[in-house]
Image: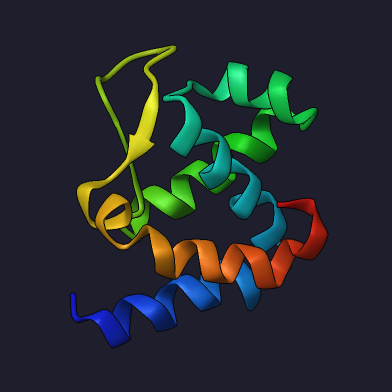
Length: 100
């Protein structure tokens, strides 16, 4: 995926949709620490099903991946997302403003 395509995708996922705020929070937490949905739910104070929905969206678009199959497997940023973190961070800052 080219850098322009990636930027457009990230802006849409974080800035252009209602769920972008939650996705931004998930990405910030995963950058700090690989986590499973239960831990993310607890740390972020959000419903488990909300977390799993947004993880599925991020996974479908190649931003996060599961380290293993099965219940409780942690999620991490993909190599693509990690290598282009500055693009993601830029969108997160625009979306969350002072919360970052």
